[in-house]
Length: 321
Image 1 (cartoon, rainbow, N blue to C red):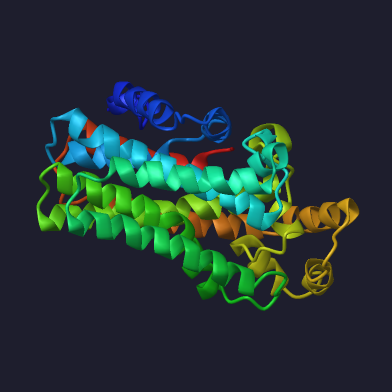
Image 2: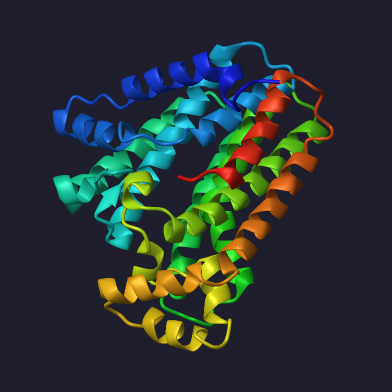
């Protein structure tokens, strides 16, 4: 078994990084600088990684066929990060100043649009069915942003709404990468469906743990201050469970609905969450999605690439950053 989930594709992930850096070069130096600022700030490269593993897990053996589209998924993701930070008013991203804070809102928006175009350009050779998959994922991201905004600072947000939000924002783009990779690799309809199901559940688990880490992590590991979801009024799973917990949940509801939250408010909310079983309950939900992801791989033949997918599903629920 590989030592890490990305060991079987480590060389190809480097090729993806090289292609990303090449593709975001512009005749306008400022566009290149902004693009490299967000791309160079790190990231787990899960989206291209899943696309690569899915491609190889069904027998794909021509890396050039999948490298470009894997880079495209990461470039498109980077574009959404620029726009997300503007929408959320975030100050930092992955430990560096948010692009719009450093370069201004107007320039950052233009760079985000530039990255979207460059990403879709890399996928230009794909057939209509695959282009539709990618476009649908991007549409879902936009729709989920609007849905999330509708429930900001709403302590009565249902869990089902939260799951719908993270499905569109996080899980469906990862699913699109898996389906695209499996299709390009020559996978059967059953295999493409299985890998799509794997990736959708992986994305759900990943985002739930991300929301837990917003409470349990620290700025050094998160790359941003903890409690940002609480500050921004985002209804994450831990917060939804806590807000409906009774007892001190009533106090938390008052803090959560405030338009302007102080550092003391955040500390009080975090301390309350750490003293309950809510974070463990949230992690358990993530583990359920992780298990569904692994179970979905049954139609996929054993290989180091399938093992990499399995390790990744385990990794996302055990990570600390």
